[in-house]
Length: 214
Image 1 (cartoon, rainbow, N blue to C red):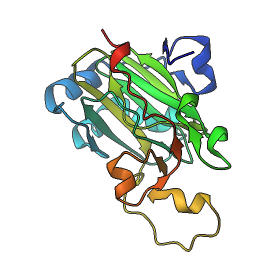
Image 2: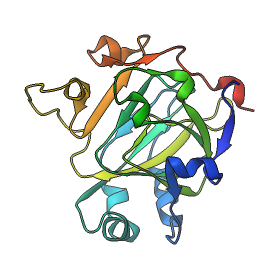
Image 3: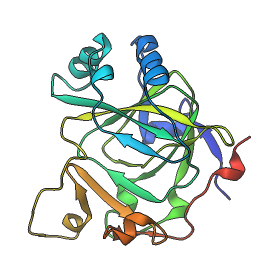
Image 4: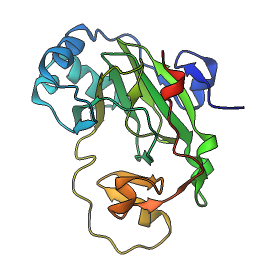
């Protein structure tokens, strides 16, 4: 069976995360829409002062991360491909201003080596919806939710995530995947990340959801 487009509200998504409810993201979405760009490629900003200044930012820090320091940035642009899979040693919250598709996989399927791209699942994250991706969920940049459309997604993570990679002596195979601060990553061979030295750990086709979009 080929890749099918599911929804984050479906039962199948509960293996990967949960829909975050109870917060008012109206102002959050407005700032994303009015003050951040969404070009024809993917951009990522780890920390955005306008988003972090909103009242809901403190609520996310205290309610979702138990008071831990967090950063709130965004991943915007246009994209239809998987390219890589990453994970963090904590949950990540995505807040969508536009319809987007999340490509996810289970970390356990890549625990002992490469993962075949057929293990990846696709879930629509509708505009004005937030989800928590568990630390056991591999993911990467969101994909466009509509054909040819750009997207804006706020990204919430513990502060410092995606910063400069610490200098370490590799003690095991997972250590080789460390690509940035709190960011373990494996790449498909046909990507810029692979050329930059990322561990090639995705076999099969580089998933492209273009044909799933309307």
